[in-house]
Length: 399
Image (cartoon, rainbow, N blue to C red):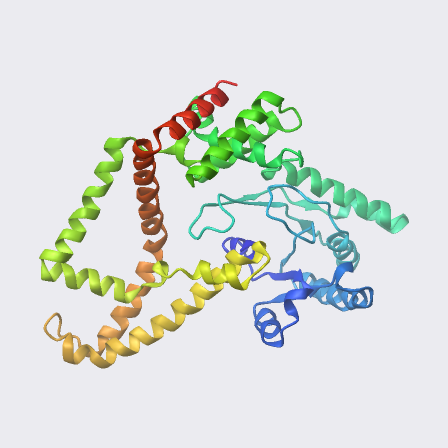
């Protein structure tokens, strides 16, 4: 998903480097190569494979020499935590060797922090934080005299540049508790600072909260946070639901347009056909593809990417099929609505794109209504547990 985020702002089509083990399947390798992705071999791929990196690094230098951006993760690996991992030296070797060939023409590393509200949930918010470019030329005098030292200095410079641009929780022992605090205290912190509920402000508050507790979290806070986590698990509630829940009037008001649409679809034939036609044009958001992905993909870091890929391909295939069907049948069964015949195929394809744009906000709104309805239902049937969780939350807010 990170390369897709970068593609949103890259001035030229970048070439990406990715871990080599995902290239083992010939079909997948062909697809990834077509998408301008090259494999990088790590020590875990076998000592004999590391020599293959020489060819990859040569090709990477050629990409930069041709004036195109090269995109890779300096860490060389990933995990499902908001935590900056140790850097490899591959990126800096490529940068140093390329700058030698470029001479006086400057080369830069652009530090970029990428932060997801949710790693595996479709339509979650994304923050891309682009930093000040780091020039390679200032390191070159030392690079010629002592390459390892220069590479280490490049690495340390990038490390220091990335830290303030990402949500980095350094305390590995108490990571889960601090991450929970970053989520459940976020709304309170935004209100204190007079900030609106945006992805950027939530990201900034997560940074601030983690800095407050990172390495300094006390036993009382740990105990209360763990009890809150246990109650949420027992209630099968997301940890953010209690602090972020809507008021009861807002929850009930949010049901009115949904209830009106359902009633209209049942009682009024034109509304029923419009709803049916809308769902027929783009049902992809309502397909539970994530359940299939969880069974297929063991590594949770790849699930969101595979799920996106499946939905993306299904969307393309569905747009083609629905366009052909509507074009073939438009002149027959759509004539009573509009006499445009086979042009209905293009209308259907256009609607697929419109609905794809609207799908994220629509699905998120429906999920939010469902979460808040469930919260108020639990306020009735599990009142003691909800009360205990709310008291713990209020105690944590006062810390």
